[in-house]
Each structure stands twice: as structure tokens, then as C-alpha cells.
Length: 178
Ligand code: IMP
Ligand code: MG
Image (cartoon, rainbow, N blue to C red):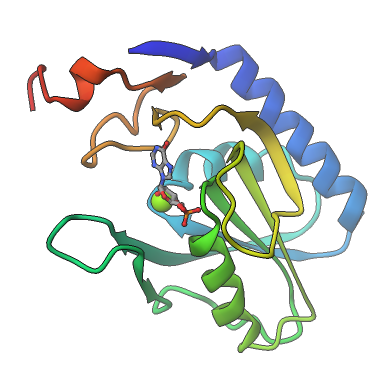
């Protein structure tokens, strides 16, 4: 594994994101919706940098990319979502890759009639976008490599790494304890 963003860089990136968000909303109340599971670390760090009154909600987006399932099929579970009607909503996720996940989450959440709906991500992968949509706030642009840590997983592992790392070929071949 190769470190791509250190713990210190991540702290500064989250502060930058928080400053942009605060500049946009001022002291208006917002509802932050974290997309499970990848956004949990960002969610926890980001909300503590935001001064306005805020509510937290969760939504689960699960994409099946395995060989056995339709590529890109996305399952959204909104059971944990609070009422968004007339609220100023900020959706956050760990990474914007092809963009399908965020795009579909936004489309579904708009049906709840929020007053406004914006989005923020920790990472955006360069040159991968397949949708006509971009997040409003991005902390870091990264190269097209598979990354883990700070909430991001590979087979549900590595979310707890306090830094962001690129998984290398030997990691992907599973030459390490499961
Ligand atoms: P998208 O729909 O292609 O934008 O993919 C977004 C989702 O794919 C993210 O929420 C992640 O769960 C996952 N993902 C995409 N790239 C990576 C990566 O490099 N590491 C870990 N997860 C990733
Ligand atoms: Mg995810």
C-alpha cells in the first residue's frame, strides 16, 4: 500500500471543505445526509467543523459491481432518511468516481422536496465521470487509482486507516490476511 494523503492533509482538506460550506450557508440551518458506509469518517470530522445549526441523516447506497450481478446496479435504502421537505440539504459521500451513485441519490432525494440540495465529497477521481453532474464541493482531486482508508473500503476492509492509501496489485490479489 502506498500513502496518497496523510492524516494531516486530510484534516486540512476537511477544514477547507467546511470553510466552503460555511461560506455558502452562513448560519442557516442545514441537514447533512451521509451516504453509508463510506462517508462515516468524513461525516464525523466534517460536522465538528461546521458552526451552523445542523441535523444529520443517513442514506445507504449500495452498488453491486461483482461478476454475479448487473454492473452498476444501485440499491438505495432511505429508511434512515429524516423528512427533507423544505430543508436545506447537503449530501456527502466519500468519493465521486463515475458519479452514478451521487447522481441517483440526488435524483431520489429531490423527490422529498428539499428547499435546496447540494453535494460534497472528499475525493473526485480525475477523468472517470460518466454523468452530467458534478458535486458542489470537492476536497481533493485524485488520480484514477483504487484508494482505501478514511472510510473507503476494499471488500469492507481498511475503512479505519487514518490516512488515504492506494491499493497496489499485491493487495488486490489478496496476498494479506483476510
Ligand atoms: P460512482 O458511483 O462510480 O461514483 O462510485 C461511487 C462509489 O464507489 C463510492 O461511494 C465508493 O463506495 C465506491 N468507490 C469508487 N472508487 C473507489 C475507490 O477508489 N476506493 C473505494 N471505493 C470506491
Ligand atoms: Mg460508498
